[in-house]
Amino acid sequence: MSELPDNPISATVDFAREGVQHGFLKLPYSRDDSAWGAVMIPVTVIQRGEGRTALLTGGNHGDEYEGPVALSKLAQSLSAKDVSGRLIIVPFMNTPAFHAGRRTSPIDKGNLNRSFPGKPDGTVTEKIADYFTRTLLPLADIVLDIHSGGRTLDFLPFAACHVLPDKQQQAQCEAGMRAFNAPYSMRMLELDAGAMYDTAAERQGKVFVTTELGGGGSSTARSVAIAERGVRNLLVHAGILDGEVQLAPSIMLDMPDGDCFIASEHDGLLEMCRDLGDNVEQGEVIARVYDATRSGAASVEYRAARSGLLAARHFPGLVRCGDTIAVIADVLN
Image 1 (tube, rainbow, N blue to C red):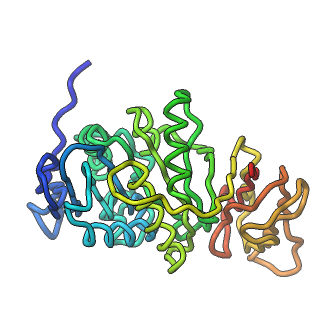
Image 2: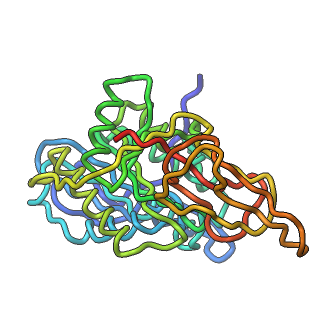
């Protein structure tokens, strides 16, 4: 097997240096308005002494804002004396998508969280994924990737881990999820996990925690506060920050199979019949979809395939065939 070429991204920070550094991951990008231009991905490194390394990311999707807000605040507020070990903070992971306010990159339409392990000689998005896979993930012991629903989904605020083949690794990820201590904690089922950042980190044996903290293409004071407290809790849990994990009640949820997902088979106007956090029963009408091209046509009803808690819903009010309308999770405690 031939060796992969070098990734063109270069860091303006030294990942081995003590202290606080604010810089960039610089990706050369020649374009019409800048022949020798670059995509500049902000990065902060904070290091003091020996200890574990946490890699903290937001903006994997560019229309999700809790991670960028919480990590921007963390990067400007911490000093080296606060840290035992090392923090690598990337608030705007897919920087082109973030600046466009879009889920995917305006440069190449790339969905970063479906582009791993990436390619060093691929598209801009694939190069970013490759740099994380081959350069940043190997430096980390614990990885936190902060998500929300973006413009097209809304979630109950939860931290999440995945069911993994290595049960010791899964237990460590679950301990990190519980330490994050969002109002809900989810054993999460992914329908398309093969090319996700989550999977790339887990395949390298990392302790990986992710979140879904709201949605609708914005953040709220509450969702940002959950992210900020969760990040600090996780870093205390990892021994990187001093203090105690601030615990509040968290409802444990599970997504055991595909029956959790309700997908639309029609285009049209969406009426949600139950709200986030509602308990629903198998067979209950969760949503209706109306034909928006004419009046007088009967709506299509979508019913729950299982009983549980409504954990996610489509956002906003128009739906396309194939869109996920709702997610119903089992309550474990």
